[in-house]
Length: 165
Image (cartoon, rainbow, N blue to C red; front, side):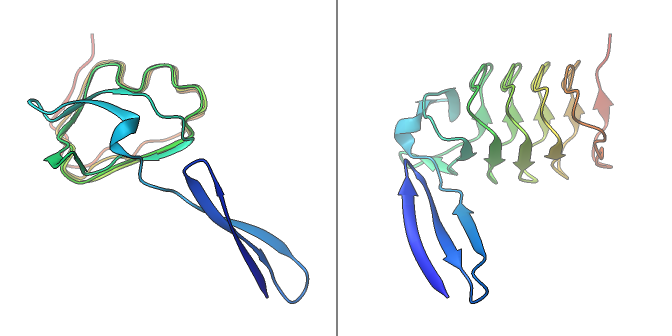
């Protein structure tokens, strides 16, 4: 078996050729660096994503401060993002946080998230998979509006409020 390591931007992976000659690329999602975010340390909130990764694993801490919130419009209109992993410690995803991320396909959130803001994933038309937090208590209005590819969402038993007009 031949294994070669490659790095493209901040995404790393391996090219694997097995004994039968089959080729596979094994990609590793890397944690975004603090430089990829504008961060309000006083409120422990990511206010804007300025990186260029397609797969983003949000760090649990930025400059020694635990990330507790993804602010309003923090990732809005990020056309290159395909996957986001939200770490333990984040409790709030703000309004329009991922608004119009047309290529976003997968979101995984830790169980610490308790609220999803209004229009949080509005017009993420290729979103096909989302794992909602088991700690989620509130889902605001139109959170998944325009998510045409999302066929089902398991609402955790912890949800006590789904806001609608």
